[in-house]
Every structure is written in C-alpha cells, then in structure tokens.
Amino acid sequence: MKNITDLRKISKVFQQYGIDISGKEKYASFEKDLRMDKVFVSGLIFELEYELHRELEDDKIAGITAPAQVIELLMS
Image (tube, rainbow, N blue to C red; front, side, top):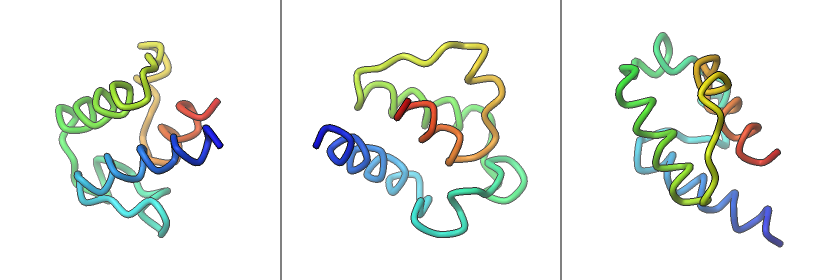
C-alpha cells in the first residue's frame, strides 16, 4: 500500500513539472528531450525527496538523466 501512495506522490510532482511518467517521457532525457535546465532537474528531485521524506545520495543524483531513474532510486 505504501508503494501506491508513494507512486501517487511521485506522479503529482512530475505533473507539476509537466512530465507524464506513464508514457514515453518516463524514459526521456531531462536535458535533451524534455529540455530542462539542471537547476529545474535539481528542484524536481528536491521536491520528490521532500514529498517522500527521503534523501538520495549526491553521487547517485549526479548520474540521473531520466525520470525513470529518479523513480527507481526513490522506490528502492
């Protein structure tokens, strides 16, 4: 049940940024395909961490290039 609640929170934050995580955008590159600046990607990750009350390690955040990677890290 907790996973479903977390996925709803994740979906809500991505929707605020205009990203549909149920389609192809889930695997799109933040910078190339979604044309997001690194500052906005950092803000997105911060909001996701805040909503889920989790903190990702900085070295893992540096390697994130797509929404699917963020979701995988947050759900593990």
